[in-house]
Length: 174
Ligand code: GDP
Ligand code: MG
Image 1 (cartoon, rainbow, N blue to C red):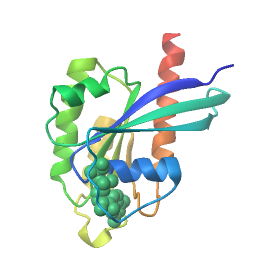
Image 2: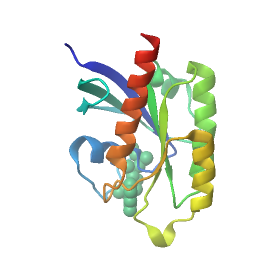
Image 3: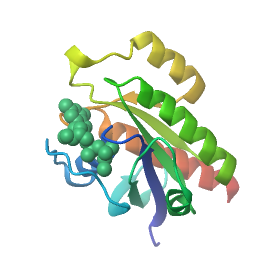
């Protein structure tokens, strides 16, 4: 059987860790340097899917971030099977950006599976988003993870969860 292939888009405000989370997941690496992404960067990774009983190929589009998506960014999202929304736990305004982008994307392309990563969990002293707030978010968004691209905490779990959600949706609509 050929593996299932799914396009996944990583979106969120600038410098929240979209590229770092992708790099951690795909290559298990982290860099402290900040190189802002121009346009879009595409990576692929195959995971062994329990739910599918075979490989699941994720084509990950790391879309250059900002708080407001223009027509170009929106065009990159076309055909996405799921989304990785990323916010930065040291910058609460980045969660508002996620909420805004989630609304815009759902309006344009309809609902799709997603996970929300509140990233930079390793920066405890600067971490501002409270557990209560994240629990409240989890009520609304269900799959919320506190991640660190630096240490790797929960990055793989979060993206594997997204893959499961995508498979569940495909199976339901098959
Ligand atoms: P992007 O603009 O959303 O793609 O953000 P980047 O992945 O380029 O990351 C922005 C900056 O935050 C870089 O300097 C990264 O090294 C840093 N960064 C990203 N994720 C983490 C994390 O989990 N912990 C810490 N401490 N720094 C991070
Ligand atoms: Mg980037």
